[in-house]
Image 1 (cartoon, helix red, strand yellow):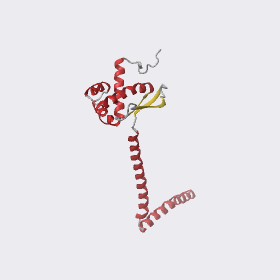
Image 2 (tube, rainbow, N blue to C red):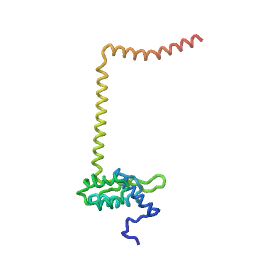
Image 3 (cartoon, rainbow, N blue to C red):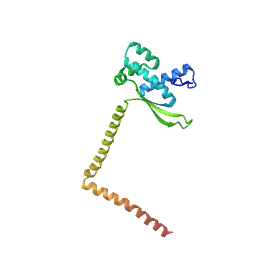
Image 4 (cartoon, rainbow, N blue to C red):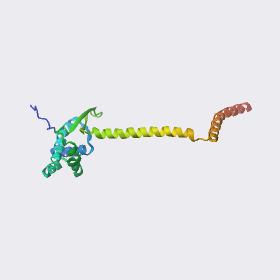
Length: 185
């Protein structure tokens, strides 16, 4: 029986392939802070990422060397020992979250997002920026509409009205020409 033996999934890969895969996945998750993968891989990845972030909180040279085993790039290692260790300084574990997103269309495998917790602050900031940009665009459009009506001089208004009348009269003139052509035949 394999009761209480979580965390030893093989994924049909050799040991070296599995280590390389999770090393790359840990690196991607630390860099992007959100990764889409299968549910089983996300559950397996969760423990490895949490271990790396805990090592980052320690901040010792020994912790750096151990963390380098689990992270593929030195730039992401700097992020672990810099901003992430500061962000999670008061949190006693539970640095990641798994969100189930349904099944993959091709093989019906259960998919999930695994993301770092406290990422919402960044998302809220991005949404605020988007809303400010959208509000700015709306006010620009309103301002353009107002200026279009005010900027025209009376002579320009008469000219534009005359052009509009000409456009309306042209189709009528065309139909009269067609009638004339038909009468000539």
